[in-house]
Length: 178
Image (cartoon, rainbow, N blue to C red):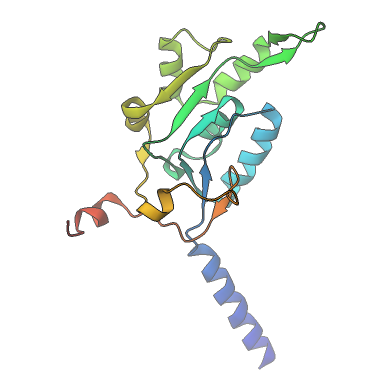
């Protein structure tokens, strides 16, 4: 009897894991070391969680576009993606472009993003921003209620996991009364 109860508890626990509506919200992330973001987003890809881009996602943060499946990413009207060439510190302490890392970074992006970057001269030391209608044409919009999209207190850190933020499909929203 204890074995059956244990098995039933395990099945219910696993069923609850699949039903989670956890999301990762990215906002005000200025990037950092490429390797750190590759590792972070590989774990995120494996989790199957949805990524909401709801503010600045710049530099290495943009690796999320190539690491996480397209259908697991949505953008709000506040989303703002910043792209530039990868760089290292030179012998004199100044930033110098790293062509190999820049090519690796560029190769990670989906083809629509690559085309957009190429139309603007490629990845250079100068930051270029993808936002608004152009971004919304490449990624699905997030449908958040006012509470979920409102700025959080200081307890919210970039890339923090939020539970119970539900992203309904557009068909469900169309059936909602005005």
